[in-house]
Structure formats: structure tokens, C-alpha cells
Image (cartoon, rainbow, N blue to C red; front, side):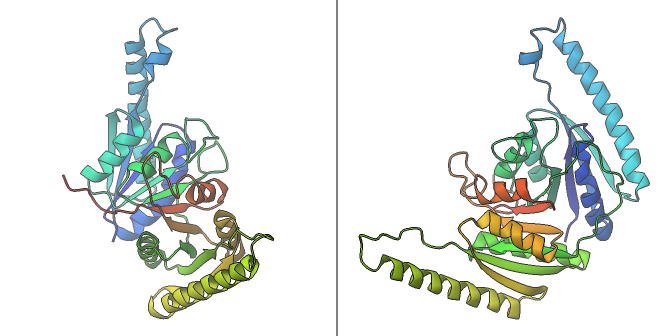
Length: 305
């Protein structure tokens, strides 16, 4: 059950593309909608040409206040009664993740790029930092235009694709996706990608045969795993095993084939060095997907102090 949803914004129309998705869930659950704008002016860069950088920062802060007031009115007109506006100062990704912990946020909904550069190495400056730090599921929306959304009305979700690998974190992603599906009246397709072995040598006997056997065994395990989920888990009505060298490509292809309105997956290794999925599969899926991507961290819930 969703009781509190957080939407970080930066004052740009681009960031507002997250709002229709958040409003849809908030309306269905009668959840609180928290909108957070983090005031962050890089005075170290601006001060070289700015005679009074502090005054400039205050000018930006005041403009942000006016923007938030206008945004609150527009969201209220769209039919969400429980709206809370927050204006903080600090480093955006750290503050968003901390805010989510401190306010018991159940879901963060945000655009993957805003005022920052559009082609970042990972998920985009702020969104990447939020995904790495958050203990809360993050629904990432990748708009196809720099302009704001045409409407703030709800977005329908009819089918969710959940990418699994048999790990506990991917099954947590399935649980979160099933909750979202229940809210939306949507169906869930689960899939697992079997990556063929890459070591086949003409100089070592039987490597090709062993590789085929390993791949066949992995495919059987994946089919058995997904078949059991389809039988035992309410809400799962489709299961697919795909053999492919590139898991992200396979996920995007299946999402397109089934007409998925959302993709869900789990993440592991959230540190800066060992981003096992953020730097590879999840990042590629987010950058390539035409639909929102639900990213569920390995450890969901407020950390103990």
C-alpha cells in the first residue's frame, strides 16, 4: 500500500513528466503527494562572473518559491487533495534520498534528466545519485521531449514487465510490481534472460558441447522457476525465457513485444565502485525504454540508525 509518494522537481518542464504517473498512483491510493525542490546553485562556478552571487542565489530561491506555488495549484486542480510542498537547500541526490527515509516515503517518482546534461554515463546526475542512495523504490520516467507534459491527468498502466534473475532482490522488485499492478488493475509478465556461455575454444576439447549443455540446463532452470511463479503468484499471467547475450536488449525487446506500460527490475551493488546493475542492465534499460522503469533497491525500507 502506498501512503506517501515523493516527486523531486527542479523547476524545469522536463522534470514534470513524472507528475502524471505519481498522480495516477496517489489518486488510486488516496496517498499523500510530496513535491520536493532542492535549491542548489553552484556558486563556485557562477561567482567568477557574478558580482554578488548570494543575491543571485536568493533571486533563484524566490523564483523557485513562486514556481512551487504555481505547481501546487496545478496539481490540486488535477484532483489530488493531499499535496505537500517542500523547498530545501543542499546536494539534490543526497537530500532526496534522505528526505525519503525521514518522511517514510513509499515510492519516489522522478524524471531521469532535468536541468543537468542529457547524455550522462549512467542514469543522469540527480536520478543516478538517488537510485544509488535510496532505500525506497524509484519509478524513473524518461520523457521524449524537453517540453512539459500535455496534461497532469493519470497515466493508465495495463501491463508490467518484471525482469527476474532468481535473486531475492529481483523477487522484491516483483512484489513491488505486483502491488502496482493491483492498484492499476494491470497484468504482470515475468521474464528471465539466459546469457549463453561465451567461452568456446577450438583448442580445448568439448567446450562447445559443455557450453551447449550449460545453456540448456540454465534454460530449463529458468523455465521451471518462472513456471512455478506463474502457477503460485496471483497477478502473474505470462512468463518468458529469452536466450540473449545482452540482457538489457532482451528486456527492451520483450517490453516492446508485449506492449508493456512499465518495466520493473531490482538493483544490487549500489556503491560507487560495484554498481552491478546500475552501470549495466538497469542503466541501459532506463536509457532505452520508452516506458517508465521501476527500480527496486536491494534493501527496501528506512535504514536503522
